[in-house]
Image (tube, rainbow over all chains, first blue to last red; front, side, top):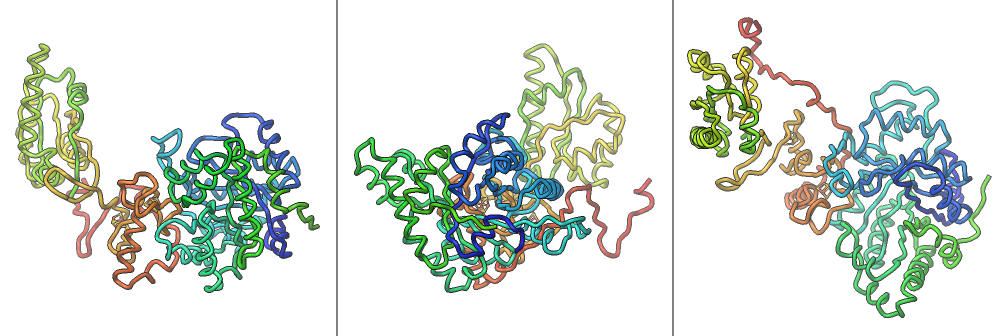
Length: 308
Length: 225
Ligand code: SF4
Ligand code: SF4
């Protein structure tokens, strides 16, 4: 065991993992976090706590992670390279581990231009690839990036993101290979809508032997509305939404669109369960946390395995 | 070359407030080429300042001179006999030139008339683009001659990120993704192996003022004084 986190145990035991996502509040107070967590508890193996997602200031990821932990849910602490240099990152990792955080997701982060402080100076002292390597060094060598020894090194299960849909497609699997070489243990993908492309990506990853070295969690976000699908298609960089999905949502009664979105997601999850090289699903039901119990139920991923 | 652009006129006037006799010093090198601070720009700015001063009854006596390079002692010397006649110096050189001017005449206020913007290229007359952030450890050798530090919005050393959108950067569809270009160029050269290796965390060298002494040279004692 690298970290002994619940997510690691589940994946190592060969169970199909199911993880969720929770965005911290734009203000103080633990209630909102606890409320969202209540829908996720028992329905997911771990929950990603986003780090100033879309470059909008929110409660820090580690703080919200700790609240989630108090609720009996395992956090997956996200850290982006946009807001911190290597000193701040390492000290936050030490603190997070000390207070019980065991999983991390290492990301570059959306550019600050998208957020509520577009004037900010982006840090990007190191990139996500290098962040993975840094956490691994801290864990496996017990050393800081600078080379000095760490007293009681943090044992973190290291995650990263992969976007199989961004250009250049042929390079994506090599980039995944680079992340594996850096030391990533699990990868969550961008929201998948183009199944054909995803199958091709996974096949490449299988052929290169990558899926033996990393746990891939397929990213799923149910569409709530036709508007959301269209927005994702045209406005979100690196998102691939085929017209078929939009047509299918348009084809149902207006009151049934969200239901159809969940149906599509469940069909995808069924396929992922059988897909070689996919170790689980990462469900990003952002601002739709209360739907997670229903989605988990309909996707037949309950009850979640409990491992001591 | 170093590319600069003239400061907004009102800002320049604000900086000059209270000074009645000013020398505007242009530079004949980079800023002249990029049409920001050469001889012509000095005379245009001076004419505007003169006019504005007359119009709102705050006349200013403004003279102009353009030297070959403000970042070079050899050329600054030409100003020694002149600056004493002025209350302030306005400089249209890049930030380095402005500072060198201020350093040479520490008793006289030296004010910037341009905003130094980047190290870049001349795409066409009047159109310049940034290409280098002078990071002190050039990686162009394995990035196909495209700078990720400057051209990638996140300065990633192991791109492209997940935001690449049909060849453009996530920040703007009009901004090409540096890493997409790097990939395409290296692929064309059959050199993709250059970016298969992980680029380790950068050893940032631009965090303190840097000095370069070329091999075979040393800091002259005289200059140190
Ligand atoms: S890597 Fe980029 S910023 Fe650094 S010296 Fe080369 S061109 Fe300039
Ligand atoms: S899209 Fe390309 S240029 Fe833009 S931040 Fe990502 S890797 Fe860099």
